[in-house]
Image (cartoon, rainbow, N blue to C red):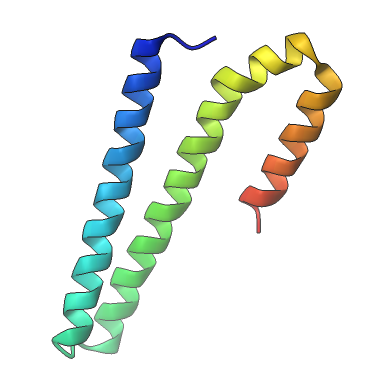
Length: 92
């Protein structure tokens, strides 16, 4: 089980990533409002997409590191089902 300090640190990292994504989205919105070139908008949108993918990997990684380990010990069948669902969700 993850310690409270580790949970706090992971939550802080996750929220930091979300804040960065919000900043990127705000920048994209401003660029659209400023009628920036399409090429620049696509580059910014792609950066947002990559940041969201990175956030998803961060969250899935945290699940594998902590919750999945405990569940595998307590209930391997349930753990495999949960991991399969998470894998499918992360690859939509």
